[in-house]
Length: 495
Image (cartoon, rainbow, N blue to C red; front, side):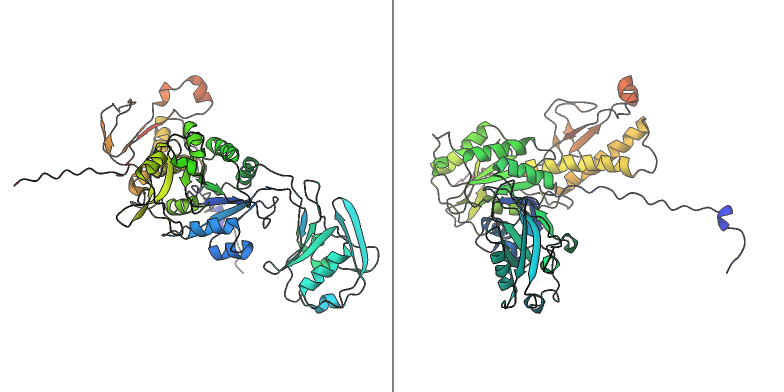
């Protein structure tokens, strides 16, 4: 043992760990909102990284699976999908028991009980059952059936082999439908812990829900998670155009920014004289964050479009894409007349279409406003990249960013870094600035870097802004790289 004075009296060293910087959003994450009763409205959504995981939960015929299958069938393959739920019909309250270990699942644990008792609240009413006999049951499904019989129509018990737990579902539906945790009964053998229904077993009680609108459902999914950027709806029963309009209105105003995609199978969209179809209605509203695709074969075709768009890595080099000319694996391409294709184009409605050279492509890859999808997604990413960079500068700095020109220049540098990423991935490129100028930028001037960042001097600030510790307003000019969708070639022949 070393004795003596502390070395800290001479040399004192403190280790200060810089806070972890905030990450930019994932602009490749899709939400598929359905109405299958696999996920309850209390849990609201789950994340999946493979189609096998989706199949395990939903089976291979559920709308959620069919949409996810198109999403994951794209090449390159996207990496993540969220599946959410909304109460298209009233749902029942339920109690998900705690996960049982292999030893706890041994059938002998149950067959040894001939005087089982459970004390539990279902729909706010105490249910006290005793003398439940499991001795004749040969498996956990049989055990669940025996308890269901004992509940006498008040609820149903099932064995969930996937998650290795019992589930007790109320016989009623709606917001008053509920199942509480089991408590110790006054007599008999307590089976609450055996089924994982007591609170100590770490189960979960989820209340029932009244019927929700699609807009209420998408709002709830947005409140539940900010991890998704795009959304589509794959319900058990097709929703009305009015529902799509309500969802689009929410998405248009959403913060953080999101996009909504829907597939229409209405043949009226192919008629240029019709203006009552969903594509025409959304076009008239000039929505920037909603897109429509026509498909006669698949009600979830837009999932494939999302799958291709959501593989873009904005942190890479030359990774930006345009959706036109891309394919949709799993979706049957449309064979349309020139007038029908023109009707879709005039309504800003996308389609996966056959050409007479044995190819099929997505066209035109636009939002309902006519803005190209790749520009909408790219600009949403760029906004978030600049915002995150500036936030991280303020958040991770061990000292304050001074309210001086030098301090503002640090903010400008953070903006520069995000804009350079936009140049690198192909969203932004050098070109002529055709809008009004600001700072040193004039209309008609060439943006040699593809962008220009301007910040006025601190001395030009109002006293009120300075006292509020605001930085001067920073302006950025960015020239989009665009993409070639059409080409004209003239062949001059001389002889």
